[in-house]
Length: 334
Image (cartoon, rainbow, N blue to C red; front, top):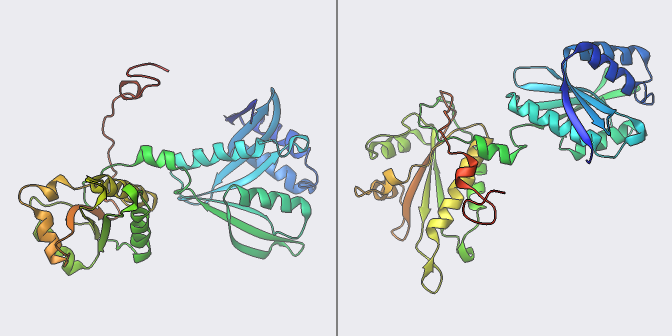
């Protein structure tokens, strides 16, 4: 993607100029004048991303809101002579990041169903290649010769690095919405997928969403935590040596907890790592383990509440990157 520059265009006349230049270069896809002129006109109101390569117009992409949680890739074009040069992917990745930061949860795009025309099949393969999934075909939305294929994409799962930056420890109230078992299972699977020292797999997990059982567990936790969370994950560990006298149980369950915290956030829930409160001298974890029927060779070391946050999580103040991270030596600037 060398020499490719993608930027947002705000000026309506400039949007129309770029759209016309590109779309009139792509007559195989935009041969119907009414449709082509409609895009050139309507793009003035949409979020408009333009790509330049070596100082020349290379392509554009437009997003339009179709719902509170959904944005549509309304139109996209790259000059035919520079197809497959990374322009389309650069445009799409920039637009996807913008949509994710703007708070949208889904992106959709409409195109002609695969198998009708080779030109549109190229477009479909591009959309599938960047992560879109087939949702539904509407045979008569446009006309019989052009069955409309709708592709969708979840924006929640797209950017793991951004997810890591945006995850927060949440200690506020939760909404009463139940957490589906499939979501709890996905969170547990993420935890169990974490690495463990010499693959001893010393971490085990229990998800609790039975209201009576949750009430019994909460009654043992003083001072109280996450009293309104509709589900809780209890983290168990075993002191099993990895080799000789080396035990990495703490590292094992720490990796599992971080995986689960990220999975919880990715699925739209919130949580907080409660460990010290559970393993203090009053041994709350032991009492919770007894309620859950945990064998003596296991220790319950952490609880993670899971639910939809009632309030917006707040970000703690972090030190600057340069105060804690360096290249090639302590406090050596890169």
